[in-house]
Length: 81
Length: 329
Image (cartoon, rainbow over all chains, first blue to last red; front, side, top):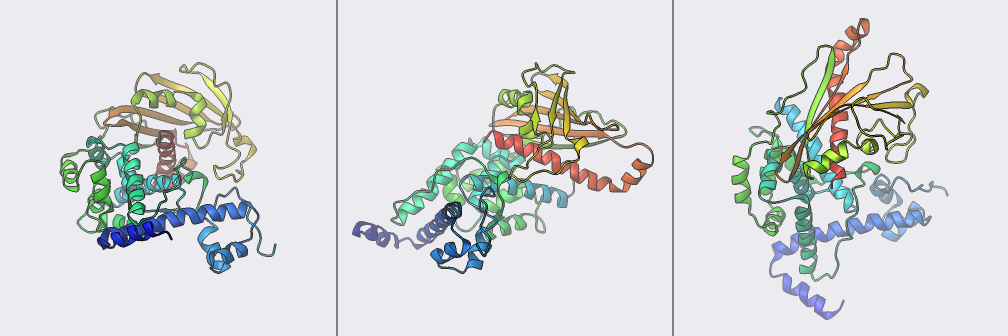
């Protein structure tokens, strides 16, 4: 990370309450991006196993979290594809 | 209306609106900021109090986005949330509340609390993270000002408007909803036959939509072949063809449509009536749906099922009301 950004982070630990709430927003952003990337991965033909490997979780965990949430127009791959 | 029913209907309509707002942002979890947006377009006194403070759905969405972006900046992260799209809730699946939002709604109908939207709003402004306080600050108001306004606000109920006369032998249901658009725009939308498939879930397509809308005019159409999420609809052939008749049109505030099945001999047509009224920041809309009850033994068999019927009527009214509300967001 570049130094100015580190400085900004460091400066902001002066108000931990605001900082903690901001981290909660960051998680929301991460969730938004995760769903988008999973949808893009499925559209490009990746399997749940490959997606899970990339996310660093088990296939079951990835499937449980996302299988209902993704755009229903995407035809999802079967397990043994 | 008893507390249980009111709390259930309030939480249903707030859940739908909040999850629709979450869906535009590419999220599947609705949090308290989406609940706040849902309250801004709520038809009860809570929505009224917010709108009287000059808060509308656009300014509220902007305040929520600015708040989120500002929080990222405060962490030293140069990123912003992906741009919001259209509402895709009805085409997608897997939605849920965050834990804190769910707890907050449950609390609003606990002992000693009324369970209506005002009770939810009171819980929301008192939520401990301070997110809602900050959003209200961006909208130029405070929790105290809002509570004070809420204490004085009365539901923009349309009780003064005449209800359709109760006709013996007809099952009727009525709901009210708020639409965040001026009355003339809502009127133009509801009187346009081409837009009927948007708000009437049992109509898929409609022909001759260029015909002038006069009382007694009949349009022919078909039932929908696919659900909004793309799955095919299974339907018996005699229910495939639909007819739509304009029953009454009284500019600027009353219109009635009738929906029938031309291929069903003993077909029962359903009457849908809209009554519009000006409200702060938009239009208050009342929707009634009614049909004649079966005569003879069928009526007797159906009698014990009246509560179920009432619930089903409410579901269809709710679908129509939310589809109209969605169009103007």
